[in-house]
Amino acid sequence: MSRRDSVLREMGITPVWRLRSAASPDEPAPARQATLCPVEEPRPPAVVRSPSPPAESAPPPEGVGDVSGLGWEALERRIRECSACRLCERRTQAVAGVGDRDADWLFVGEGPGAEEDLRGEPFVGQAGKLLDSMLSAIGLDRQHDVYIANAVKCRPPGNRTPEADEMTVCQPYLERQIELIRPRIIVALGRPAAQTLLGSEVKISAARGQLFSHRGVPVVVTYHPAYLLRNPQDKAKAWEDLCFARSTFG
Image 1: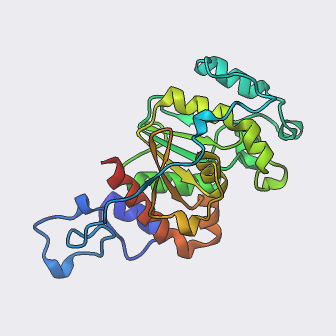
Image 2: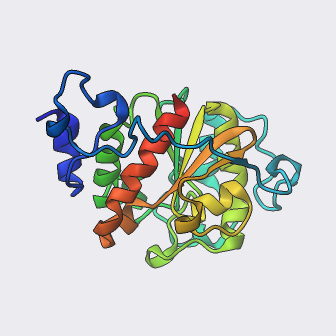
Image 3: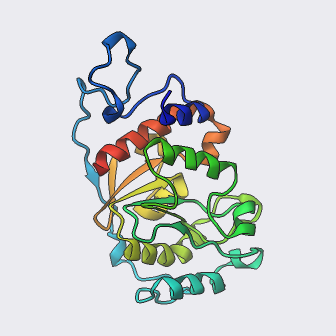
């Protein structure tokens, strides 16, 4: 059994699906496992959809100030010291992000949870373990060629969903991170992240399988790992989304 097969089984995805490139051309047809990316039925060209109005036309919200010229160290210091919205009042610390600052892949989540708030790193709880498995399944890890950030940098009380004004106030930080990283593809994990990046209301079930754009960077929308822990029946759909993102990147 390959390492990716083992990872997918740990994710609870069975039978094990493979990326198209993982299938062996010499493998007998009856022994082949199901694939989400069959050669005989290629995916039709995706329609790239851009939010309207473009994100770059919107002025930075009041409170954060201009962060457009900040480098990494100054930006992360500004994030750690930020008191622009009510989320700062009950946080332990702000969580900027983690990973390769020159990454091709950017994964954007919702906001820090309790463990992330304590440790200062996104996706370190059970949802983080699942995300690591998802990354490993497509040949990635959080330290190499991947950067992980959140739509808001401070933990919402009780791990509630960030409110619209909180995401708006915090958005300049994410925008500056995108400018510094210059990713080749962005994966939005969950509705708040997708709405922040696309500037419009999003339903994950309807947005899956479509290719969106944020400032010219392709955006793929999928479920948040915390949602998948509560709804394991949708893990196969998330794997299909990762296949789509991988083929888009390729």
